[in-house]
Picture 1 (cartoon, rainbow, N blue to C red):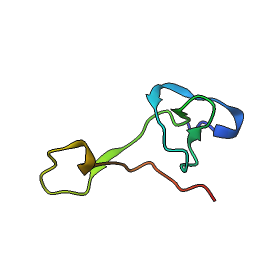
Picture 2: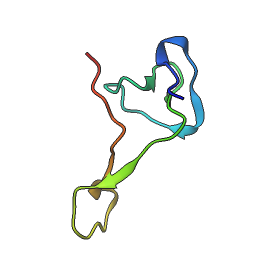
Picture 3: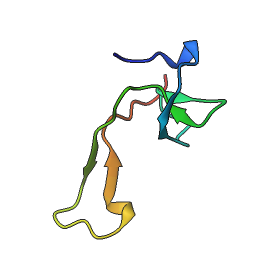
Length: 60
């Protein structure tokens, strides 16, 4: 189930501060999705900067 951010159904288990994402709940700094996918763009990730939220969708 995809929680719609417009209805303010924040998932308290997923913290997020990326305000440019369509799933970000502005007033609560949470994600509105039930779950997210975390991935990497590196062959051998060694620091936090090597990881990515692959559930990110840019707001229009």
